[in-house]
Amino acid sequence: MTENRKPPIGRPKKGTTPGGPGGKMMPGEKARDFKGTMSTLLKRLKPYKWKFIVVFFFSIASTIFTIISPAILGSATDVVVRGISSGTGIDFNALLKIIIFLAALYIVSFLFSSIQSFIMAGLSQNVVYKLRRDMSEKMDRLPLKYFDTKTNGEIQSRMVNDIETINQTLNQSLTQAISSVTTLVGILVMMLTINWLMTLAALIVMPLSMLIIKLVVGKSQAHFKNQQKYLGRVNSHVEEMFTGHTIVKAFNQEDNSETVFEEYNDKLYDSAWRSQFLSGLMMPLTGFVGNLAYVVVCILGGALALRGTVSIGNIQAFIQYVRSFNHPIQTVANIMNLLQSTAAAAERVFEFLDEEEENNSAVCRPAPDPDMIRGEICFEHVQFGYGEEPVIRDFSFTVQPGQRIAIVGPTGAGKTTLVKLLMHYYELDSGRITIDGIDIRDFSRQDLRTIFGMVLQDTWLFNGSVTDNIRYGNMEASDTEVIDAAKAARIHHFIMTHAEGYDMEINEEASNISQGQKQLLTIARAFLADAPLLILDEATSSVDTRTEAQIQQAMADLMHGRTSFIIAHRLSTIRDADCILVMNHGDIVEQGTHEELLAADGFYANLYNSQFANQTAAG
Image (cartoon, rainbow, N blue to C red; front, side, top):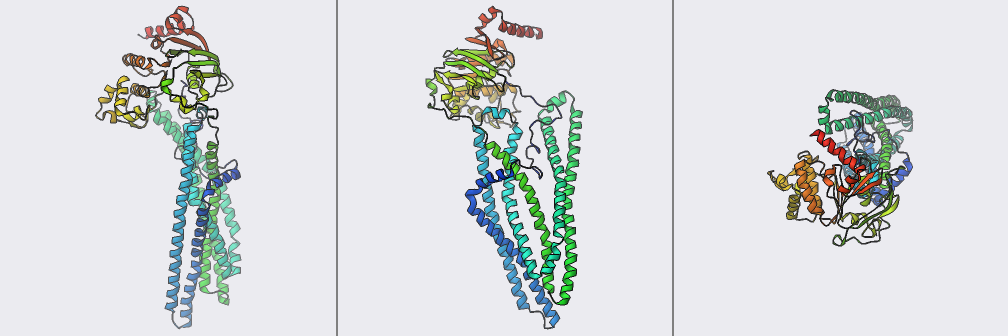
């Protein structure tokens, strides 16, 4: 099996996405092709164009009603001022009509805003639902070589963090952008209707406000990047130390782990403090500029009021508009910056969806009937390499039906690669593999794999009951068949020692059972699958000697009448194989029975004798 190498303690894993699981992209992360990515995203939104149009108009209507409210409130102020200044008293009937009309506007604005929020929430969830579904289905169609080059965290980040970034933009930022632009235009129009000179005075400070926003965003972006960088390292380090806490304690590396954590945490603190501080400055600075505008407007408004050019109510409304003017500017600036992150997230999602899939175009055979499989397998001049360097070189061999073929050799000889090619996990560089005379490429991969049962050294169990984990080998199996498979794998007794029996819950990391018990459960799966062809890759590597003897007997029953491939490092477990293939550097260097190979006194004999000598010395 390929060794799973972990990075040294204290170093982040290569390919770990900044922010780690659950981390979100921050402003400053930009897409390589902004226009192309947004164009692709818009195509995804095209089926919902009529909903977008409704949302657009409802958002504009809600904003317009909110915008004209200060002007109406100014009219109410004028009614009060006129009544007091004329000495005739306040016209409460006129004032009541204005208040009722104003309340009605607020209610209608609220209803429009609620409706557009409701539509947008459903729309955004539909879009991200389909994106998640497409990504999940895409994952099942990707070749194994894709996962060889990507970390789990990177794939997880695309399916969780990037999708959530798109969701947030669609659900919130899009409607905010529409309402902010509408608010800017509407406020500007209302200010002009009150007095063009006061409007010009208020707009003089607008370039200064935009400049401040640009400077603050530009300065904070670098710190946001560092914040995400060190957040990713902190998350990676914590995850690494948690999963390897036993090893950390065994080698007394707690102090080193804490030192590395403190280093990353200090840098995260520094970058997060700077980014948040600069972002926090935006509101006070723009507020300061806005206050300058208030001063100018108040002085100019007072002068115009003395001349009778504008009323006091109009000045009050104008000041409210000036106060509201800076907020949509900030919102639009933030949204434009956020769109860069959204484009980066969408680009990563679309890159995943555009990855080359497993090729099933040559499938021309119906699904094989497991009962009709004889089990003759031929490797004809097979050559394969993960890169430029070949791992399997001109491999040819024929397996007769029902034979038990053991594959042995040093690490990196190509043993596991050979069975991966048999399962059509990878495409051959040259040559072909046939089952009962039929090229495996003539079957779909799904159909091909239904005729194989497999037990790997790397056990995999999921969070669920014991029954669910065993039934994974055959989802149609009854409870009785599951129990029979467990008995055959010599795991039934262990299961029944627990109060819950077959309903015992295996936790997410399967840490509540031993490694050997995990192995026995995966062997039970293979019994339950009852496939005509069998692959055992170090299937007994994690069990003790006594249990191994029991498993060997059970395996002998399982392999009876089936063509079987057994990969083993412990050569004592494959003495009864019909043929042993000895591999080294991708070639078969020897083949024969256990006795024949020992008599030849070659590569296999050296391997066997070295193991025997090591076991004797250990004893």
